[in-house]
Image 1 (cartoon, each protein chain N blue to C red):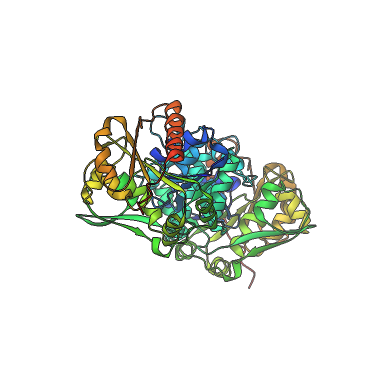
Image 2 (image 1 turned 60 degrees about the vertical axis):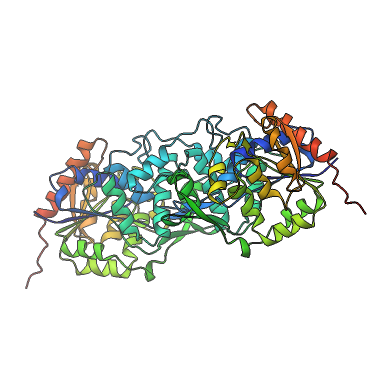
Length: 318
Length: 318
C-alpha cells in the first residue's frame, strides 16, 4: 500500500482530506496542515486550517460555511463585544472550546503537534493531522495601506485589499516537525490539495526544511488545481494570484507548481489548458474536480491517487 | 451623606452588596471584593467572588446557586472534558466569556481593578467594585493531605477536608490598590458582609497596607455575622472556624472581629449571645439577618447602616 501525504489548507484542503479519509487509502494517509493563518484573538490561539480539517474529519463541520462547527452558537462573542472587545473574527462558542484547550496546552509547553494529536484522537480521527511546524509562522500581506495580518486581510477586510506582497513571517526560522519530515520521507505520493497556493501551500514551502524535504523526496507529487474555469470555488485564490503577477487560469497554477510537482490535476472543462500546463514540465490530468458531495470527494481523491500511481516521468533520451 | 464601604466575599457578600446597591445609600457606596479565591483554570483567570458580586449587581446571577449566570449552559466544559481536560471546577459557557475577557486584558497588562471596572461599567453597574489588590493573593489550606489550593478544597473536595492551617499566599507582598485605600480613607462606615471571615475577609486583612488603612480609619466598622443559630447559611464557615480553634457560634465571630470592628450584627434568635459578644469590646446589634428576598437584603443593610450611624463608642472615664 502506498504512503500518501496530503498538504492542505482550510476548506478546500478539508474536502480533499475528507475524500482521502473515506477512501481505500485512509490507513496510509498523513495530512499536513497549514498554520500560516494562525493568530491570537482574546489571548486564545486560533488555528483555522487545523480546526477546519479537524472538524471536517470528525463530521462536525458546519456544512453551510465549510468551517466552524455545526449547530454552534455565538453567545460568547456577543458577550465579549458587550465588554468592549473587538469581535470581527468569528469564533463560535464550541469552537472557542478548542481554542481554550489549545491555548491552555500551549501555555503548559505542549507542542502544536501534540495538541492537535490529542484533539483529533479524542474526536475519533484515526489519521495523523500534522501542523507543518510547531513554530510560529504567520502569513502577512502588504496592501495599499501597509502590511496586515492574514486574518485582518481575510476576515476583517474580506479580501478586498489590493495585495502587493506576501510574507510568511517566521517561516525562515521555523523547523518542520520530525513527524512532518518522517511523513514526507516515507511518502510515495504527495498530494497538494486544491487549496489557495499562496495562502495555504506557500507558507509550508517557505519553511526551508520543509521545502528541502519535498525536494529530496522521490514521491510522485500531484497538485489539484483550485481553479475551475479560471475561478476559485471559494476564497480569493484567483484574485490574489493575479495581484501577485501569476498568469490567470491554470497557467498561473502551473507557474506556481512547476518546480514542485509532477502532475497537475485540472477540471475537465479546462482541458484546453493541457498544453500550456505541459509546457511547464508538468503532466496535466483532467477529471471532474468539483467536490460537492462526500462521494465527489472520494471519487476525486481516488482519481488523483490513481493518476499519481500511473504517472511515469519522461526519461530524457540518452 | 455618609460614605460606605462594603468588604465582601462571594454569595453572602453579594447579598449584602445587592441590599446596599438597592438602598438609599447606593450613590455613596464602594464595594471591595475578595480575590483570595482566584485561580487559573484552562489558562483562564477566574475570580469567583468578583464575578458573583458582578453578576448579582447586574441582576444576572443564577438565583438557585447564588453564583454563576442564570440561563447559562455548560457545553464548553463538556467539550474540554472530551479533549481530556480536568473539569471539576464548574465554569458556565457565558461565565467563561468573563474569564476570557479578564485573561486577555491581564495579558495586555491591564490591572484587575481596571478590568473589573470595565466589566461592571459595561454591565450597567454604577457602584465601584474594587478588587482588594491587583496583585496575586491566593488562599491555601493545609489539610491532612498537605496544602491545597482554595478551589481544590472548596469545589473539588467539597470542603470535606479537615483544615489545620490557612495561608493567604502573596498577601504579605501584595499592595492594596490606590482605589481601595482612597475608599477606606473616605469611608464613614465600613461594613463587613456576612461572608466567611477566614476565607473572604481575612485574605484582605492579610494585606499589610489594607489592615493598616482599616486601623487608621475613623469609620465605624460594623460586621454582620454569617451565623444564625450557630450555623452558616451557606458554605463551611462554622466548620472552618471550629477547625481553626475559634469558639462555636457568635463568640467565635466576636473573637475574629474583636480588634477590627466596633459593632457585630447578629440575628434576633442569637440575642442570648449579646453579653459574650460585648465582653470582647464589640457592641452587639440584633436584627433579622436572613436575606432571602431583595427586600430582606435592603432591609438588613439599611438596619446595618442605621446601627452604625447611631453607634457611639464608649468613652472611657477620665
